[in-house]
Length: 494
Image (cartoon, rainbow, N blue to C red):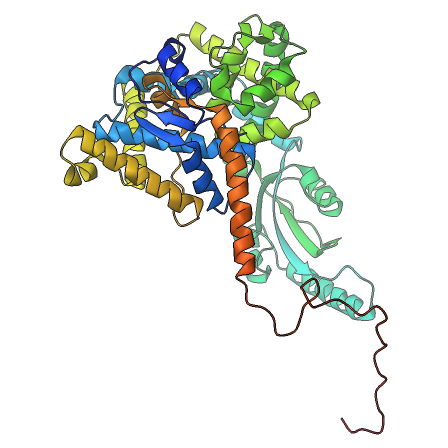
């Protein structure tokens, strides 16, 4: 099921306090959803779905209703010229961006200790062959043993031997540019810095046997004949330091995370897979869920906190689908990853890692820009509404109408989808009231299914009849004992 994109527009902020609103929704089962003063009736939702080209499934219907609510909430905000630019509201909604930035700043500080900046150590590692660097010239030769292939290989070897006799360290790059085929290497035959195992064994072994600056005799591999020159440390020291540092970073990160997890005494609860799948199905339904799914020295990881983290990941809808389809056995590791995020955040707190003014302002500007771009995509920007409607009530009606028309076109694939990002959803959700009626969704699905069936039947009945009855059509019954096809008449000319 898609994550509800539902946010509301009424006066009350905490939905649990809006008893009158809840009762109204419960009493009106003909209403599938409500956003402020706008209602999405079961009939209207069913008609949209029945006329659409989308699959009729419960999760799809839920998503459509959620989208309608989101768009209508944003429309009301536009009608009131509310750009949702209150700092407190933005900071709460942009928690994922703020948190990720703080963790990144902490991580960058810690990770500096993992990479080696010791020039002497890097030189020693290079001499020992921890990573290799080379240039080569390749003379193509087929690997098979056919006579033609043998002749080609012999010619390639003779050419390689002739070129080898002319090579020096000074002219190697120039000769490589002259003789290499396109794609055989980088400029001047450069292969960069790499581990020995990255190359085919014949090449890797021959290179490792060379001293820095030495040039090999022709070396046969499945690709042909290589002439290899092992680069000196001075020639590749910057590349080597970067590559060697990346390796050290990976080892350092793995060690750091393992020790962090072990010292934090992370324990995943048996109920975690079921709870995480429920969260992925409907994160908003768990925003106040205190169910504990894991423990650590950083505290309990509750369902509410897990829901917050899930929406903080890139592309939350895709992640939620992956969670729902994942086997239960895979989910404890995902929960541990969430706990590790908590541990990183806890350490960032302890290190007093904060955002400076410029970073905070940049995040806030990004949010305001996102609101404006979404309004524009839906054609409900406040200035566009003001051109045609003077009062707030008129602008509300105009914006709601434009959203409804947009939804009609979207569901028939005549309009481009305008996504509402999770951070914008969060801001709308915290400021406005909303409701989606589960019973109304079920009724809309049933009605839409009937409408779709009638429409399909009507389209089929309107298809022109074939002049020749086709299998499965009236009048097209196959003969019980079909005669065999006649043999060709050899007396007739073609």
